[in-house]
Image (cartoon, rainbow, N blue to C red; front, top):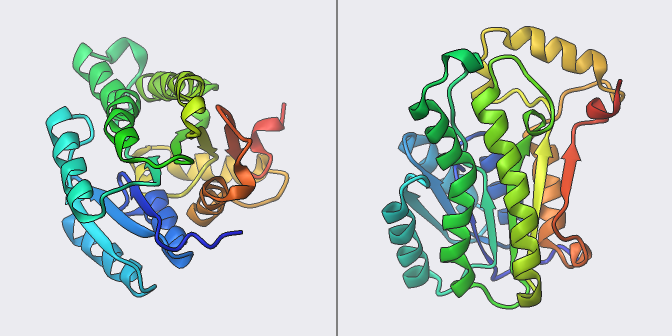
Length: 250
């Protein structure tokens, strides 16, 4: 069911955190990987070395997914190296943490371009390289549907991302391409360290989660693996929440 040998996956922002966990999980199941990064080259190379220990190929590509030229160049390399792509995971994310009244147009556009519009550009480049039965996933967060302090721009961009997934699912369904969102709960990644109230967020999440622990990058990666498998063939345009039940609490 999870024998994906010979498949090719691009995971954006996969040098660290959730993206790295997804890349390693797919590598364990025979998938060749494209590790994308924009700043942390050493981390990307270390991730690639771990991936190759599973006997698969790994291409490391520096590209800012908010820049169309970077994305086009990245897919030219993928086409040259592999000639195809089976799985696309739009995971790279960024944005400023500021109250809404302090946001500038630059802050807003930055978050929207990286967190939402990038999926459109990536998909437009990926689909011509996808055989029938390709899979596209976007990684979102609870900020798409909940108000979180100082998360205005990022939360709005994640909401736009989830809407884009639904529209792509309808348009690409006839091509037998599945498009879905994985929404992660509170995960203690490098990104969360930028929150001034990080520990308060983590403690509160644990207290509110019925399963009694934080979501881990591996938890998210397990769902990504499932969505890449034949078992998920009829899941389309959905947002799958991986949070141990946090979001169902009143």
